[in-house]
Length: 230
Ligand code: CA
Image 1 (cartoon, rainbow, N blue to C red):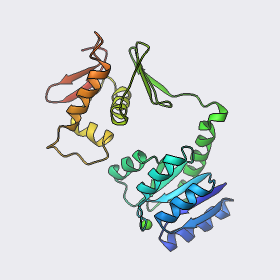
Image 2 (spheres, rainbow, N blue to C red):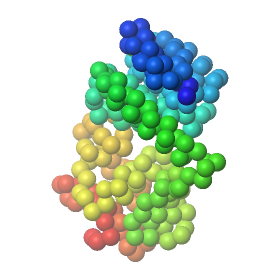
Image 3 (cartoon, protein in one colour):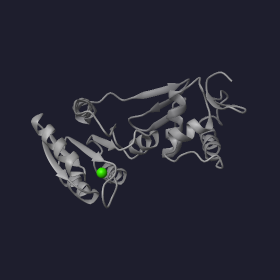
């Protein structure tokens, strides 16, 4: 197993490198974001461990740049703070998992094992099972990012798709605007914006407008709910 480790703190990096090598991983260590992108794109790694705070280019950016070219490589982010915002930002940037610092080395090893197992399962050559979620006759294929209602394909933007997925995963629960904003947008919620309402309307126009049975309902003063019952 080959690991790319991007970490600028020499103490943490040498501790990690030593521990991982003792666990039979090969480790290439880079100290900044530029190097991480260069090595990450030029070589084949089984996992990339990426610190968020890196010189030149931060871990979120590194993650995005690598994801554009390499869809499959598992990326584990090391976040300094166990903040939801960092977590969402990391996952939005395309990370597969994250671990807050300071971390327990055994836990890190367990996460690495889980990630490499998962990536083998997801390998398309091994016929990955497609992940599908649905409500009524609306079907959302998470693997292919496809949405169909009544068998008819519906084109959504990336953000509309994320919003829909969040609704379906939480169907029959009222979701307030702050929760939706925190989960679907990687910005902290500014109460002065109506971005959630705007996007809910975009989504309604695409998935509900042409159908008798509406799936998204407004709960005045509370938020929105996705349900087959109005
Ligand atoms: Ca750092």
